[in-house]
Image (cartoon, rainbow, N blue to C red; front, side, top):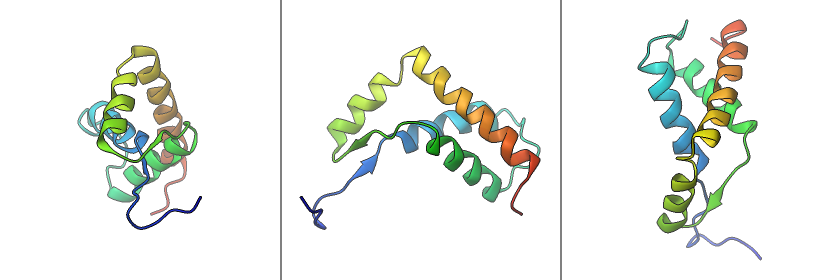
Length: 94
């Protein structure tokens, strides 16, 4: 199978991870560096250590977001975000 331009493939973990990062780290003001580069690096590093959840539509995205309302799965994401914050704060790219 090949992907055409009409099909849109989307990793539904991106908004979930970004939302939790914003809620628990950015808004809380606990980051040493609050620049956009560090924030992006943290989210990307966390995403690289979490399983992707690909979907091609809004219904699939809503289903995946509903699954990730479970406290244990949110805890898994926060664990990876915490690790990523530690790594990026030790050696930021800016």
